[in-house]
Image (cartoon, rainbow, N blue to C red; front, top):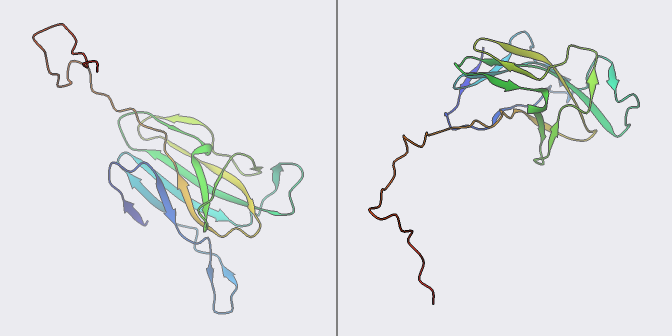
Length: 175
């Protein structure tokens, strides 16, 4: 399993890879999908098991497909390896194209088991499919997991404070 370690301050996890490689004759060749690509940040792991471009199952929503769009399915997982709960959702999974545009999952559904919105305790996994509608000519370059913002706290009692001898506030002199 390929692992990429990123610093603790990473707010955005991304896997940069083409969805397929071109053979010598210019035809797309699928990659081996038996081993997921894994990206780790402290306490969370993002796994990409499969990308289908175009999606080989049946798109169930929308019921009428846009002829100018391409429908992509991704099977992904988020694993909580930390001590605190992690909120996960299909809406945290995005695709990015070569021009920097992002496409959020959720506007499309397919027949495979969908990733659900779920709070993960330590050791739990949220695995499922996320689908996307992208312009037919979009060159997708990246799968992103955008984790929810973390709230980092310092209690008031722990915060270094400067105590003044006077209770009178310092005022700005008027001109």
